[in-house]
Every structure is written in structure tokens, then in C-alpha cells.
Amino acid sequence: MFLLALGEVYHILTKITCKSSPLDYIPTSLIKSCPIIFSELIAHLANMSFAEGCFPTALKHAIVTPLLKKPGLDLNSPASYRPISNLNNISKILERLFLSRFQPHITSSSNFNPLQSAYRKSHSTETALLHTLDHIFTSADHSQPTVLVSLDLSAAFDTIDHHTLLSRLQSSFGITGTAHRWIQSYLQGRTQCVALGPHQSPSIPITTGVPQGSVLGPLLFTTYISPVGQLVNSFKVSHQQYADDTQLYISLPPTIMDSALSQLEQCLHSLHNWFCINGMALNPDKSDAVWFSSTQRARTLHPLASVNIAGTQVSISDTITTLGVKLDSQLTFNSHISSVSKSCYYHIRSLHHIRKSLTDDMAKSIAVSLISSRLDYANSLLYRISQTNISKLQRIQNSIARLVTQYSYPSSSDALHNLHWLPITRRIEFKIATLTYKTINSGSPSYLASLIQPYQPPRSLRSSDLHLLATPRTRTVLGSRAFRVAAPTVWNSIPVHVRQAPSLDCFKRQLKTHLFTV
Image 1: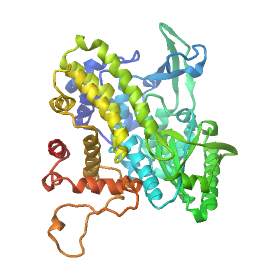
Image 2: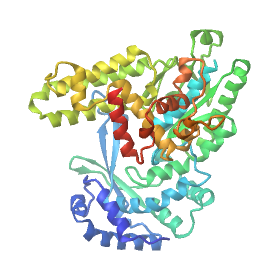
Image 3: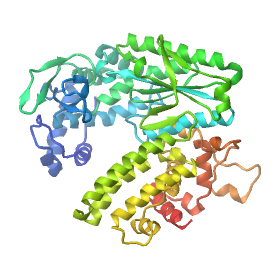
């Protein structure tokens, strides 16, 4: 199949985390501390495994530990627990080595869904949401409401049929020969047991699904459901996927609203049938739908109460949560800001109780990881939201800064400047500009790159060499919030020497310096 060089193995070993499992024959910390020694041993094991198309049987066992999802749930109900699967560290290393060769081949295939954003470099939940909302904002700018349906799959990773997966890898992605046998060996003959404290259940065989907690499993899953994209496209319905999270959305021009809605429901019916055929269960009761419209008048003129999903009428909600972001029907982000604020203030109060026991660096690290990270998550979606909501987020950041610096500065702005933290509005612009830089330099998903175009003046002008982007015209504020408009607006406002930065790290440093001065 392929031979691994020692350098490849060494590179993988230096990047593994030091987390250990009860199944580890060799402590992970020891492997990480002696990568040169273990590189040769693991390279030999991996090359034998890949050459023979056989995954070691000793590495196919998993220990599952059930963890309570959140306090207050029924301790006697299995549904209250989240199963955490622990695998052998050598198993994960072999998977990473195989994945380094397997993933580029899969993701470059024409049969792989380009709108699948999970487990891919430069792809994230934020880029997926940006693409979806760009469509919704643009449609709203043309006075066209949009219906979005978020689908829920029951135990999606656990219901994968191995025969179907292996067949799809062969027919759609050209995985044959030794590589195909290795994946087959990897999937078959696996066992697991459940551990509660010192007690373990008897081992049972695993006959379906991809290994939970594995490195290779997520890509195998996305490969398995790749035909979903082609199926949705055949109905001319827009979609976005992140692992098993699937969002379908379609604009409803007033003249063909009934036809467009019927098209969406036909697509949902076909998807339900496809999931059934492929051993997966679409759960209409946990699926959500929302109707985005820019005005209350549009909602009054064209009332929409529900969407038919596999024979079940799913009511239209005012708010929907998808990929960790609350989206309301009028795209104000009020519900999302309220949710973020509540979570942040909880952690601020907790940090306040222990602040005197922490060093400044420790307090800053905790604040960044628990609070600032929540403010920054998907903040590119917040471009040009109401000043009221921006002020709410800014008050949170001010509180963090004053708490971390122990109120040693006369104002919040001084505290922010000392910590080298950009204010909320500038953090949003920083995120958009960074994503734009990646897009221009082929470091972002193709679906974002397709939304922006370089500025091309009608004749030769001095602005031709300034690396500007074309800014589409819009009629409404909502239209200006679309990525295709926000990206060039922010990008063109940056000094040319920053836009021409030779690397992403250099761009971020220069951009941050610039944003502190404006």
C-alpha cells in the first residue's frame, strides 16, 4: 500500500497528547518523551500492518465509561449518560498514520461533499454558519424569506453498516486492494466493555458503526454519508453539513413560495428514505425548522406554520440552535447574545471567588479559555448587529479585564489595552479579516472562496495594485451582513501593507496593531 518514513512517524509522535487510557500498554507520556526511540518501533509495526492489510487484533478493544450529561438528570436512565470510549494509544497512532495518506485522497475526490465541514483543515462550524447565513442575508436583501430545517439523526455514528461503507469506499472513492482490506480489518472483529469504577462488564462484539473515540472513525462517517449532498442538490435545495448535523434551506420567492416549499418537503422525504435504506434513523421529533424574514409584514402576508418531515409536521420555531449558535427568525441574534451573556457571567462570578488565589497569568489564562472563547466563538456572524447587543458583550469583556487586572487601572479601556485585548467590534473585524486573508490565500473552504471576487476596475487605475475586493451593492442592513459583503468591506478598510503580509501570522500581528490604532 505505502511505506512510512521515520520522519512521518516522528512528526505524529511529537503531536500526540499525553492523555492515557487503561488499555495503554506503554504510557503515552513515555512515547512522547522518547519520540526518536519509538519512531522506529512504531514505523515497523505500521508498515507491517499496512503491507499485510491487517489491523492488529489486540488493538480492537475499547472501554466505555458512561458520564452524566449534566447534573440533575435521572441517574437510573441510560439516556442521561454520554458514553466515552477509550482506545489504546498505539491504535490511535496507527490510525493517524493511515489518515495522513487516506484523508487527502478522500477529500480530493469528486464524490466527497464539498459542503461537509467536519474534520477538515480550515473548515469549522463557523465557516459552515457563515456560508449558510450568507445565503439567508442575501435572500433577505431581496425580500425573500428563507426556511431552514435542522435535521437530527439518532445515534448516527453507531448505525453505520460496514458492508455498505466498504462498498462505497470502493465504488465511489477508489479504495481497493490492500488499503481496502486494512479498513475492513480495522472495522471488523472489534469488542467493547463498560467500566464503572473498578467494575467491568463482559466484552461484547461491535457489528455496526465506526469506532467511537477513534481518529479514523469521523472521516469514515463523512465518507459514508457523502451521497447526501448529491441527493439534496438534485432537488435544488441548499444545504450545509457538519458531521451528522445537516441544515437544509431554501428561499421562498413570493411568486413561487408554494412550489419552493413543496420542493423542500420532497427533498426531506427522499432524505428520510435514503437514511432508512442506509441503516440510519432520521428523528423528525428532534428536528427543527425556522422561517427567516426581514420584516414582520412578510411573515403576516405569507404565514408558515410547519414543515412536513417524513410524515411528521414540524412546527416553525422563532429560534433555532444550530452548531452552537442561536438563530432567531428576524436575525437579531438577541437570543444568542442572551445565552452567551448568561454563560459568561456565570464563569465571571466563579472566577471572582478564586481571583485572590491566582497569579495574574493564571487568571488571564482562565478568563481567555472560559469567557473570551465564548465571546469569540462564531463572532464573525455578529457583524453589524445592533449596538445594544454589542454593548452587552462589551460590558462582559470590560468585567473580565477589570477582574483579571484586579481593578488596578482607572478605566476598562486601559485594562483592555494593558491585556492587549481588542474591544468587541474590533474582534469581530479581526475575525472577518483573518478569514478573508485565508480565503484569498487558499486557506479556507472553497464555498467561502466562491463568495468573494477581486476588484477589477474598468480601466487601468492605481487601485488595481492595492489587492482590493469587489463589494456587492446591497439594499438593506441585513444584506450588508452577508460574508460576500462584510469580507470586502472590512478587507478594503485595512492598510495595503497589512493586506500584503507574506504569512498568516504576520498578517494577524500587523492587523492587531492596526486595529488598536483606529
